[in-house]
Length: 99
Length: 464
Image (cartoon, rainbow over all chains, first blue to last red; front, side):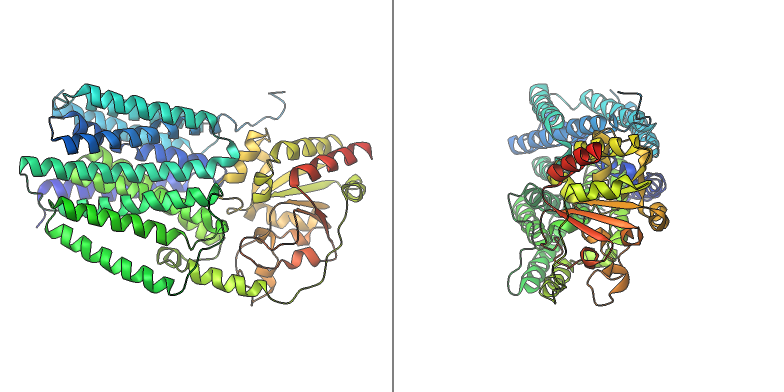
């Protein structure tokens, strides 16, 4: 049988999936591209695990795998949020305001 | 920093992610939402840096700096037309990070002699499998979108059997690794198989199907992060990963519905078969040659029009014509015409592609109208201008039961008074399906590069 922490994590997973479906369903097609790049940046949360593994006392292999993971995940986070920000700044309501 | 405080920081970060995504429900609050999510990420990263176990700061900081530089340069340099490639690449990086973290954790546990129990072995397997598949699948999607590879489906004899055999071998490797989760060699083998599978699954998929593929890979990158969360017993990863997984799956479903394909159909890789049907029908009977018109001819029609709907497609993106299109619509609006844009969900190469391009060109977003809302307006519309779109305006989807795209929801442009189609040539689109729209009585073709034609059309309308 699964132990308590695994059950807790599964519970979180299922509830988060429901929240995800509820929240994302309300995003209009207009914003689907920023949604993808923004949610992509959020999936860069793996950086947290990567920091712990590369930064703690560890064997060299784990440290370097962790280091590579930090780089990839940070590209994801920084690139994702910045490019989303750039895109969202372009969506304007009034055509005359910026001319 | 104590474990409790870290957990609380992760909870705050998760709440900010959810609020951030919720603010994406309106273009007015979307920027704020993105900033909230970024703030959540910052909190999570800072909290983690303060964990007692983190001692080797030079390595961590170096990784963060290198990653930030690459990310910032890419995000500021990328052209809006290339956004699908950017998202594909970011999906891949997310997958790569998950595999690497899982590998590092396995290696670290071997040294510490901590045998994983409960759900962790399965999570290690899932991280390697989904992460690896996401990495190479995304790289192939990137190569196709960047045109480093040809966009058409790549097929070879017995492809389905080859894929099925490799999938079976991969499944066996999954089971083996789940039973011996601390076997680093086995982990490497499974990762290699997942990488191979990612390539094989995406190469038979054509360019026009990329919106589905990118949305699905988006979902996978989230699910990979989620699996890694189980490996590390980290709730922040589980929550964020499942949010992104859900988001990608919803987008995948929307894209599938817009192409009239089932989600199961996509997941189990029937793309190859679909494309085969499509290429057969391309050799079908020719319906004659449509007459080519000039922008001057079009200007005459436009001069009598009151309402105009522009239908953009991938051709507009390729020609970088979005700014020219906006200038044309400004001229039309100045002449008293009502101008709207009809956006098909799968126009372009990723969900929302056309909206971003037109927003970049300063088209106000109220003018970008979704398919279901604008379809009833076509019969009352004087002129429709189709720019580089093909399958999404194909009336065969409504009329021809033999067509491979029969049943796909399309923009009903042929119901308008006049339809102008700007197209580079008479070559059928990516799906290889003939388009009867081009041969209808009320359709006039203007051949040429989208940007060039739109600029000429703008001049012609101004000087009429």
